[in-house]
Length: 505
Image (tube, rainbow, N blue to C red; front, side, top):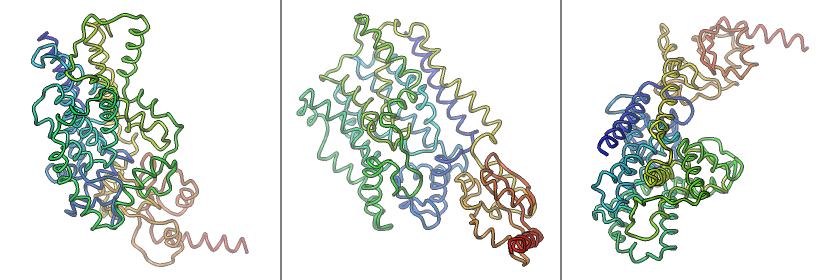
């Protein structure tokens, strides 16, 4: 048993270390990571810890500030780079891994036994080696902190019901506060639904009341949360209406919600979230589903039940926590695959219980190999992209090359109509935007202007052809071509314009 514990522990530490290493070498690829990293960079630069800013003069009302606080602090400590931006998510993931381990271990009659430790380690390994669990462990996004919060809430309740220390009762409300500062009221839904289903089916209302310090805990939660919400509304009026009504009601009910200020709404077929759950939990979700189905179909029973819940229905509570995100978003078309992430820790606990209950007959001999599938694929893909960053949707290399040109800084680079977030981040907010109208005016002038560097999307074929005839293409990326415009190009542009007018006349 000790050998198994050591093997699982080394495997878990290796997976976490690999993910941390990839976080340091991969560039930010548009749009999610550089968008949130740029918001955190602006926070660190301006010292404004109340309002996250999407751009100059544009407050970011889409998310609360907890993840931005963590990333901005990391930037201040370690510099503005990929490792510093991703480290907070990795640390949040490490917290989730511990909570998964503690939850699975607490479900045993004696948490200090080797069997309990093995079960806990298997749950932690399974979560860490799911597709989305591995990817999210080192990604700049708010979801890692949401999952830390929801996992802390449900895990605290389970551990407390299993006889855990009273501190876990306080952790329940701290988890709610973390979630409200990381993602908002969605935290109350994702944790409240499974708890309500469990207590309604088992009639454990009194036990639930006695287990947690509801009055003092709620006061603690509000004390931690309300000051920021009040200050945010006072500083940028309209925040609460957009965030509470828009982000939490209209975004859920209205496909292609036109009120989204910061991105594009999505409209997927209803029920797509279940396909996302299967993809996000790969390979373990599919394996657990098949294993559970075969066990039921054959009518066999496990020889032993490693879990010994002290309160009725705890397995149902864990199942509800695992499926609530998918159930909640079943009838929503405006979804992302990250929406199922809060359920994965508890899916991992259930899968570990199935694995340990069958004495190795479930997934015989191949469990460790299965745990390596996603880390191996992720390491291979991450290493390739680290060596070939130009294949990613990132402007890191282009901005660096432009900045290295003699007499040129990244602030001299203009993007036509819209600058990608990666360009904004890697230039420290230096790149600027030029409208097509302003570019047309620049091309038609017969005056002396300083040279201009303009990045044009490769999809804009007409503008590419126009500039190829009038300017010098000096660099480019997977998505953009950079042209240098000079006064001579302006004269040529005017000459061509006059010729066209004469021809049309």
